Length: 430
Image 1 (cartoon, rainbow, N blue to C red):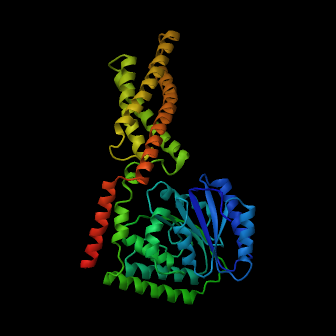
Image 2: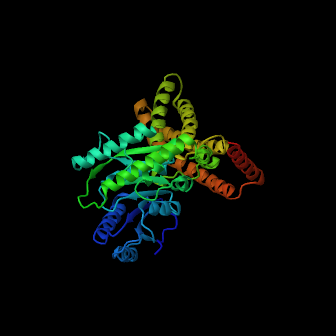
């Protein structure tokens, strides 16, 4: 049953095989957590790996009862196979993987996905090996985990710390390029994905997690260890012989849609993220305004000091919000954005100047400190107007950018085709 959310921010995938006794508790617990603590639209996908018990029936019943639950059924076993299909077909912006036992504390979910939603990172992993992690598991598993990651570091020179933690996330635009390069469909899938991604220059974000070992885990440790060692050997051989081609992935990373990088349409963390960043920049601007006003007031009238301090901070505020609040880089639309910011500045000037006139009319001998207080209050109102003005401008540009990306001009298409042919010819020459 397909979920009614057409474009969620998050899709959380739980691969399962014969988990009829655990799946319902896990899904309901996760669903309740998302309702209470996660500010992003999210769906849960139960990826059934050819279960032979009633796992699929339970999952389909949950999808009928809970609005955000979907079911994906595969006729073949393989956790990696399930994640590869679910992630590459995902309609969300960020895809997440969790083990069905929910061993990882769910409070790590937002720190895991935040840098992917913002566009700062490409992949994110939970790590049980950080000194900030709190882990409850036996010495045998602890030794195996640390030994495995030590082998990875010594043989493949990886920088990430914990390849096996069942708590990961990926941007789906990255997944569609990266995952077809991953051969393994079982337990080595995670490691292979991370190693290839790391070699190609993807940004991998790590989050320390609180983790409690599941005593009912049915993972065959010996068989999985042998599979992992064979996978490491295969990757080492592939990298040494050059048979693992990273060019296309590296090219995609370096040239990810120019409009995505240079003119982010809507900041991916949505309105909440915009308000938070705008508030931080606004606080810094207000502080700068206060310092400038106080300094300028020493040698000029209140109105002139207010005008200059407000003008300077308005220009800096618009520049900072373009870059950090709305994610706009480069010069595209800069003039229009600054003009909009100056229009908001004009309204802010009217508010603050009017406040000064009113204060002087009511209290001719008002102290400079009282002047400053009245101006700060007026500036707060002006700041709200500035936010709404800039957001309207950025969102209009985002729609224009989306249309341009959806219908690029022929010259741009020719340049991309030429670049692709050049890369193919270079590969044939090698």
